[in-house]
Length: 257
Image (cartoon, rainbow, N blue to C red):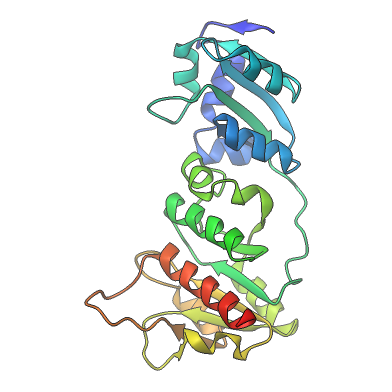
């Protein structure tokens, strides 16, 4: 297995650039850090372009991931150059983003995210979506990158197993209505329907908004109705990932109670 000792190596410099969203978008590649996340991406059908393994890692790690694709043994200095973490993992891998998107109107409950900016929030929502049986999560074009290092770590592999689609949200909502979906925007208005009414609608899309401003005015106008989660303490609002998780749990509870 070839060794790389210099941070000036072209493969190293190319991998390091993938810490930037624009470079990931331009190259069609994303990075996994750590054996667990790398295994999950590979097991989910993502194609590994290459990987970098720390010289201090076990031989078993090199044997395992060497069978996935092109691998290099690198120094700690090189790993630090590529990694987005303060303490780099023993393996960093580059994967191709999948081009194909599965049917985005094939389920009776879909979560859509409007301008969610915090990658940890986005990842947490994807993790909860997988836990509560949601198959499709729609991202507006203004959402942060689900393939950023923070989002991938927060999703705990959920990104790889869900149908995550970035699209023009208004166009998607308008088409969804024609497909028979009730489109429900979340907010704090007490005149909205409460979350316990969620399963009054056979097919629904629930829109979760931006952490600071909620859903945009244009998105709110495109929705059929609004929905809120009653709160009985002193807080004014919920974290976007917490709100999304409550709604997804409530959907599954009502469906199977």
